[in-house]
Image (tube, rainbow, N blue to C red; front, top):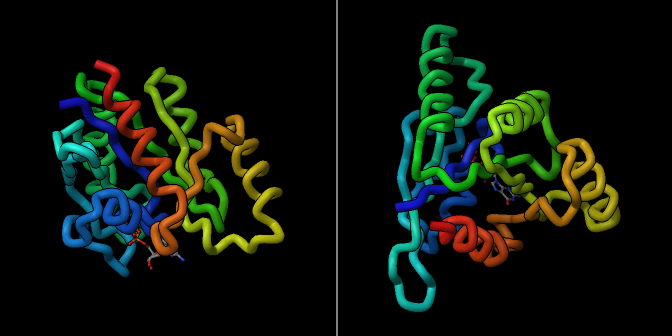
Length: 179
Ligand code: GDP
């Protein structure tokens, strides 16, 4: 099955977004403690209409795990990089960026790394509901600029308020349907 991978720093809202996407709230556990998602978790994405499996969404461990010993961190990084570089089924990497905080240095480093290896990727901004309405237009422009992307290339989502989830799901279907 074709795969899309999701990466992002701990606490960016990855589990919440996967829950919202999956429509089955028990699939991914939302943790209050950053850095809990340590293994590769797979989710099957079904076609909304006929329930046929379209592809897999792979939840990669969050980066920026402050409390983890360097040795373990290096092991995780090697695993993630190996997966991203070698996985044949991989069609798209979604880089989650906290919409309230904006792209962190680690997010930008991840985007640079993906670009340098020519791995297809897209940016998904999370927590849209946390950005005040008055600054949204400006924030959307700034976030895209910092990521060196056009505004239309960033999908804004709120798992909490169910914003952009359908848009993201239909883009996922397009990305996964490339084969
Ligand atoms: P992960 O570590 O990336 O998997 O992040 P989580 O999904 O566990 O979310 C981290 C924190 O952000 C939790 O307290 C969530 O409730 C909160 N959160 C996630 N998505 C949203 C959102 O769309 N809106 C708001 N307001 N909070 C969110």
